[in-house]
Image (cartoon, one colour):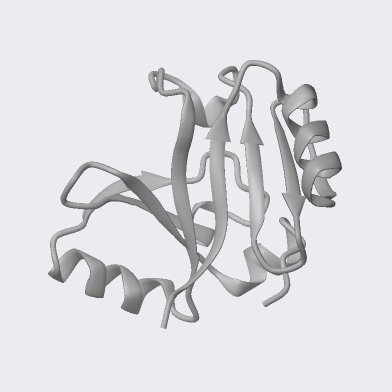
Length: 129
């Protein structure tokens, strides 16, 4: 079973956005780079991405970017979502753990979502698995 574990948004003002969610909802900063900030409430994480992030190349969307689901077996779940109409969209670029730690898809409406391995969620994004 897949479990919703992160929501990602693309914004110009990462720090201002992160501080809002920290102050408004008590979210904790669990990861930060020059082009992304990860916040968590201990269960679900909010990933705030700057448009200059390497994974945003050629993608001009702002606001809600994608949903992320934690799955035990990426290959099995990838086959399952493809069987019901999802289209593979790629993988994380420059992932510390390799490109097979997340698979990206588009649902039948074009909304992007990804499937993430427990190791990646735990070790990189510091999300409880």
